[in-house]
Image (cartoon, rainbow, N blue to C red):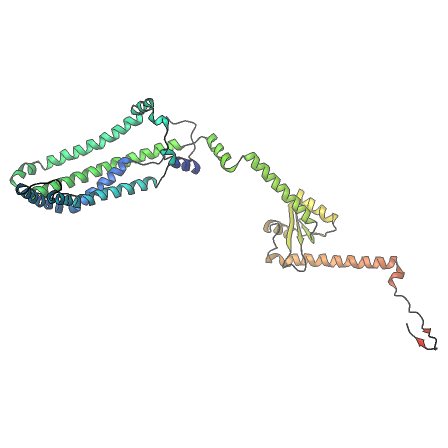
Length: 383
């Protein structure tokens, strides 16, 4: 009886583990019925040629046996065996190939080392007795008896439909009798194979349903599997938190190297850095709310200009990752910001130079030239 707590569909890992253990849905009835269909198809193609041919062959063989001595290794038995194999091998090989193809189509190629490993419980008499009288064993017996009963019923029905021809076969020649037997054999094979094919299809569907039910998992099993494959969720959350903290620390450190900080002004803050040897400005830090406030604080501590441009700040925050250059669509807007920054920096430098000049006027005037001094010969030489 299925566990009521196992209500979830099997995960891919659960299916893979079951496959490694050899738990593959295969119906022996479906394989056998498909093989029988293939044999019936071959017999319907060559049956009318095989019957008369074997009739003539065995007549000649019996005529030779009545006149010659039959030896175990003699040519008579040898050529008889060759003739039998000549016609039987293709039919048997067809059934074998279809059987293998059917097995592969149902479950693919599976090499289950775990299923092949010896286990002591397999040799336990108690386990064997329990398996013999289990519901699964009884269902297998019924599944074996039903096809057998169907074949017997088809054979009896075929004989009853040809009963008149069978009774009259005593008055026909061997070739006609061989044709009759071949036709009846092909008819029995076709009808039996179609009935078995229908039954095996139902059996395969039932096996698939049972297999899916056996593979179902409880929610606790799914949680345990997720923990095994992806790690403990608590540990993963802690690692993600540490990674976010490391990225934030790195961004705050990089914000001190920015050329300008573009703000929303309250929610967004994006730090840009641009040097003359760069192809385009890059985003060195960006943040929202508390992180944005921290970036603006770092900018004030390092005398980095903070420019308010709401559309540009939002576009940079949403469209550019940290460490990437700005897209071409934002070149013009960022260039306007940088022009204002450079202009403001130039004005600051100019005011600083003027302030220093007013504070020290003597340092701003060039030194006066010294008067010329005469040499011993009375000539005047400029310095």
